[in-house]
Length: 247
Image 1 (tube, rainbow, N blue to C red):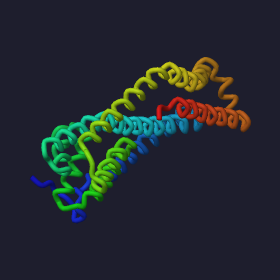
Image 2 (cartoon, rainbow, N blue to C red; image 1 turned 90 degrees about the horizontal axis):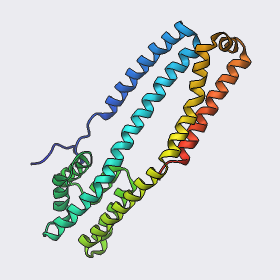
Image 3 (cartoon, rainbow, N blue to C red; image 1 turned 60 degrees about the vertical axis):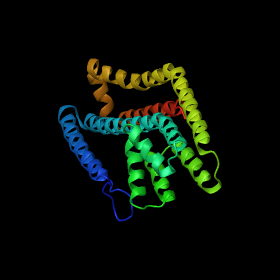
């Protein structure tokens, strides 16, 4: 059964941009309400900080959700490569093997194979469909698989054996990445604690010694010092996360 597609040969994409815009609008509205509430209750600094924290937390949550989907695709890619190799050994062509990998895979990677299979059924050139698949997956592992498929179409060779070797390489890379993340878990937790601790201490002083803290808000030097401290704290937190990121 053929799936619906566009005139370009690639299936019509869901309106994710409109969903993202509506999500941004909702978060902006909630942040505005929180900021106004903080301004009424405790002043402009608290209102701005509350609104900024809400927006920053939402963006961080969205980035983590996207990163989780990308990681799941990478984890599933080795199994899909094995499925393609098995289908080729059974006598299928490369497009037919991709359709077999689509049926054997699970979301979220299945959607990318489904789109590529549909594009091939609609007559899209294999190179164009492969480029779009790499763009959809968006990882180095996908570029590696695509490079192997392109090289085989140009020069030939034992593609099933090559794909088995690629699948083994992908599994080894993922195992090494998981080991590195396990070894750096304590350091990442320490970085998070060091990043949150000054903010928590400031909040504690706000509750226990509110008169002294409000005195800092009444002077330009105090407001500047607080703002500079928050900026430096945020930069230090991002720097620690960057140093401990598994690449």
